[in-house]
Length: 177
Image 1 (cartoon, helix red, strand yellow):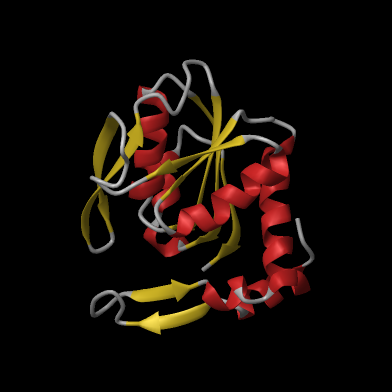
Image 2: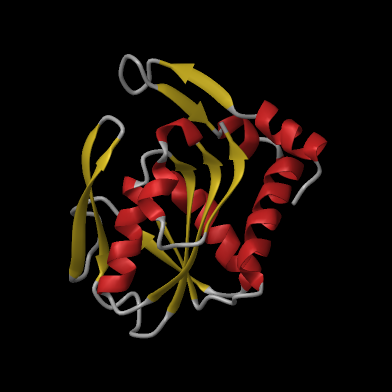
């Protein structure tokens, strides 16, 4: 785990945006962190380290900010990347699942052949809020015949208790709010 001062530096690069995407929501904007190459690389290195000992075959992540986390972690671990997309964005046969988010309902799809039976899959995303999105990714992995080896997020909104919905998984978060 990074030193407390390093975590505070990473936290200082997360911007609060009140009333986005609707009134009452305080959005955690990671774009200042993305713009800081040293700190962004350190965050990705730390997250990749969570999965290194349990070598996954694939990294799965939801659209869109999850891609920013998942693809570089897959590259660091030398494994493939599986995008989970909004409906109608994938050009092949898909599996789909719907789930609740903080401000409504959403759906994700994955190519039906993206996760081979028995594949070991680590799931990553930028934020853990209610747990709906990352839980939906886990369902799609398991419905495809894969095994979830762990869940990792850049930041966790602990007051929303999303981790409680994910009790069957090893969940890690770099920054907690």
